[in-house]
Image (cartoon, rainbow, N blue to C red; front, top):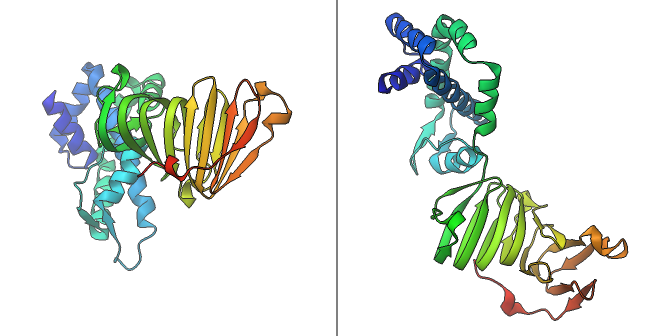
Length: 298
């Protein structure tokens, strides 16, 4: 199997000899796992080349460079494993070299394409693509954290997937989303990651910082939907009972769930240094005293 991995890697780099092409073709005929590995690696390789092509469009006069940290943020969070160490710089000359390798591999592609098309059905390709993790954010800070069983393997630097449940029993943790938004959790808090720009808060206390590129970041709960219009706020949710919202910067759109009636589902706009609360028993959003001390430090 190690030999197959080497052959696939050399194939993607366009470095296979005629003899090695024959070896890879034979393996694809007899080993379904080799087909699966080739399809998956080709998919990831194509994504990386596409990303580099897009970045290359922004270079001028060969002066631009690519930062390894930028690649980690852009590529790692979209589901592809980071391939550069921090601080590594890839020049436009290196990019052109990779493109040349990609072109050279086309010469060996024809030799195995027919076998690949026979061995790898459309359903297999669809499975590989659909089962690829969709990363939406990263755990970038944690202090005194104790996680529930479903989140026990989470550590700082961990990439977080779309649909992932987080259960923080105690401590504080910060998630940085691919959109640029940052959310701090204070235990005990439970939530689900819905996308790079949305979370579903089940219970607990969070704070959010949303820069301009991430305007529209949404926090959903069973009681209401909160859309951040470029701001910083703190939200405390008592499950199905009540919530309190403090806005420290910018503006937030608050809309109650439709089950509370048409009159209260009209959006309420909460500006900086204002606070609102909602209790199921009262059935409406009402102002409350703003408390600067409710702010959670990032």
